[in-house]
Image 1 (cartoon, each protein chain N blue to C red):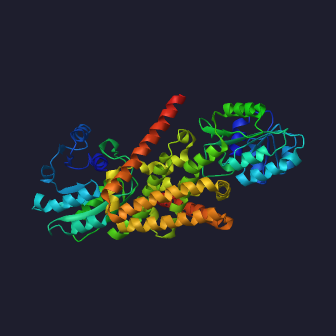
Image 2: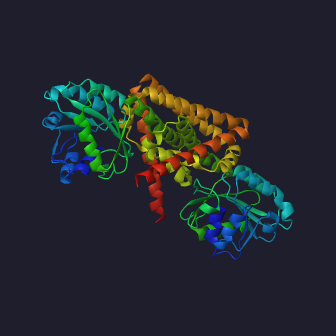
Image 3: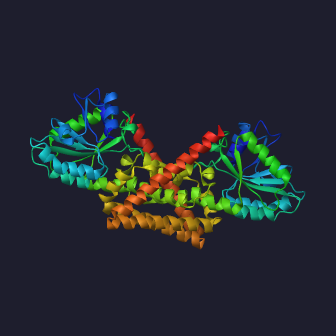
Length: 278
Length: 278
């Protein structure tokens, strides 16, 4: 995600310093011109930045935010791309007053992580959620909105709580549903299984390939909302299981039809949004 | 599915009669040359057929198989495209001795049903499962294999039981996982939800758009295997819920990593199959 943003901004920003632990990533980002300077050490990387953009798993972002006052005693602007927002915005609010900080989350995940998956067009036409905290100055908001404009993303301001609830539903629960399916299917070790699987299985299982480190941080920093969604989900499954077990044809038919009706409503809403943009 | 097969065979079969309740479907299939004759009445449609191909929801196939001895006292060959196979093969085995019957299921579902979704290339390079029963003569097997060759499908013989178990895992459970997600998400009626949803939600929810009539028959004719898979699935969800609730970081990390590892294994197996074919 950080690599994609650097690529998208490479001809637009004055100077981009990339910070990454891996030498291969630093070399590749430099070779492609995504960054002007690539360093391993965070302190060096952030020393002169006007704006620091944190693009790591959530708990690494939290750790960096705790260290930042010592690394930049003069203050600076901070933005992040973390997948959950409540914990990050609370940590941003703890920064000293001469920091300006805004939370962000672009809705354009892919299941592959790392610089190798970077894509300059990743943010084009995507919703980019922005979440304010006590340190969200006009300066940092204007700068971030200018960046979003450059990369073609659509800003949407939400509260951190609202973001995390929505993300639990449209992102974290789908991930868990997908991963649980993958685990159940592979458990059976049937050599003909993959010959019989088609596009349905492929699509529903795709998110199971997501980066487990990123997911670990997401699930542990959004426990409440994720557990609530998991509860609602297992209740739906218990209901349909009961209908099937009892052969309750009317109950099952209603359950199935309403799922299709709601899917059609969701697709229509998405189409309407896309045509609004044109 | 029946429309797709007629389109795929239109220049290869001597004469195709289509049977459909809807006048609009009959007119469209005739206009596109998918069929040589289109009739509403099943008795008329099957009167002179060498091979009858049943392409309706499973329980309609079962009803037609029960009526077939009266409709065709002279016997004929029968093939079907039903989504579950055990009940159908049992019904085929009950046909009089002068019938030849074979079960079939092409692994190329899409969530849209009806002739409007017909596609002559639907079966190309897809696995087409074939299931034998007491009435599976050499004649019907040879004819069906010749048809599969014409439409570019890859035949795979399995027992009805094995098919239904595999289908519960790679098709029926993914559908239920998808539909339950759609129901949970739309339940919340949050106007910003679809602005924040991206490709992850889209892919995992896609199967929720499947035809509920088809699904009703599938789930009620494959109860045992579906309930078993649902049980394994809800156990996986209960396990991950417990890890999250307790903040069991090691347990959660293992669960997530093994889901990704298994997904990678599955994708590698699919790629190996595709390169084998070339």
